[in-house]
Amino acid sequence: MIEKHLIKLRARDEISAQEEEAIRGSVARQINFRAGAIVVEAHQVLTVSMILLSGIACRQKIFPDGTRQITEMHIAGDFTDLHSFTLKYLDHDVAAITDCTFAVIPHKALQEISERHPHLTRVYWFGTNLDAAIHREWELSLGRRNATERLAHLFCELYLRLEIVGMAKNGQYHLPVTQAHLSECLGISPVHFNRTLQKLRGEGNVEFSRGIVKIYDFEALKHTAVFDPAYLYLERRKR
Amino acid sequence: MIEKHLIKLRARDEISAQEEEAIRGSVARQINFRAGAIVVEAHQVLTVSMILLSGIACRQKIFPDGTRQITEMHIAGDFTDLHSFTLKYLDHDVAAITDCTFAVIPHKALQEISERHPHLTRVYWFGTNLDAAIHREWELSLGRRNATERLAHLFCELYLRLEIVGMAKNGQYHLPVTQAHLSECLGISPVHFNRTLQKLRGEGNVEFSRGIVKIYDFEALKHTAVFDPAYLYLERRKR
DNA sequence: CGAGGGGTTGATGGTTGTCAAGGGCTGTGG
DNA sequence: CCACAGCCCTTGACAACCATCAACCCCTCG
Image (cartoon, rainbow over all chains, first blue to last red; front, side, top):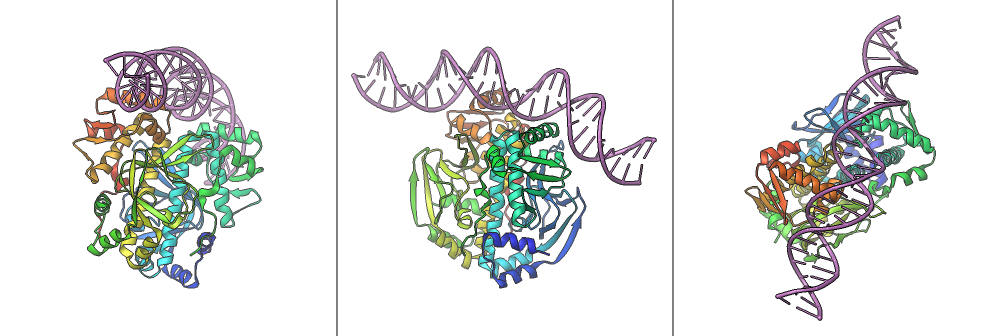
């Protein structure tokens, strides 16, 4: 159930048997959401956090006029709103892009972990800092990369993140989202997204259609994206 | 010395006398940097974190070709690289924009805090989550706001953050940075920054010259920025 | 067969970047 | 005191990038 979550944690740190037990014991229940549903609403006081088990979700910020910015994509294994444990409420929504299943972890359980398991607490603290690093990289994209580079960069990031949890291999992965969703990640219009995608396809290094991303030359794609994976902290660190 | 840091913490949570003592005891030394210096270099393994005592610093990401994106501005009281405690190295630089003084906190001391002071650990965890919230808001700016709105938004954010630590009042604060620095926050060229600033001045709600920001109508400025301070988490929360 | 969502295309205009030049202020040395 | 250098700010002209509007296509599903 939370296997992908454990794989993600163990890709970056050692998790002992007791810690794994503590994590498993903290799951109160599962919950499903339909595609398009708001999973967590901004500004609502929260008492639980959620681990994404399957599906694709995102963090989004919405303007009064309805325009939307997706600030991070979430895949299976991600602790989508762990930060609500210390923030108490979120400054953004969490939305289900496809149908999603979550494991629900009450803040009470996180409180216990933070009292009894200092190392695991630091692992989860690391997890929220990793999200912040992804936000920073997206700031760089939105501030300095053009549309082509942004899109190539997003394809690279998702490949590496999905690969960790076994959901991408041989340069290919499922990404069952619309062009409009991705344009909201990149801060461009859907029309311009479409033209950008065609340009990338023309270069022959990547394709995206029917919800499948095919990367034919990852090194070339990294090059057009100016992609440096350091911000994903993919190495295992010592306790 | 770390008074502004304590004020910032106490604006959001209760800090006990013992916790204050633990914080004060963790400061190993002070260190100064000249304007323009790199305080922390990306990708270097770190063993200390630093609290900004005076001056203005920033987090920046630089492309191979030298173009730069500032991902967050730091003011006195900010724990500029607390996240290096769990990340071990940073995905970005920390740079001194003006002359700066920092308090140095060894990771060993943070390790002890994380073992002995669960509540204070959560307070610091909250602190890094607050930085992440600022990153998200900047993603929204860079992705969806135009240049005028971005600049107005930055002036609003810095006002509220400086006000907390007593460095802004009556709609006015010192911001001894160049237009080029601010343009690197906003993801626009220095030339366009200058024209944007003139446009805002023409509207009569804000002025910026000789390193001083004067806000004449904060509500109007908030309105042009579509500024919602929720992401700064300015209320005091319960233990 | 029709409706609807998602994808595609063309035309046009606004926002922003780039290049180049000049102005103003400050600090320094003659 | 003045000349000069250097940094920062400002302005104008032009081009690139991207948004918007509108129309159409394609596929799926009821």
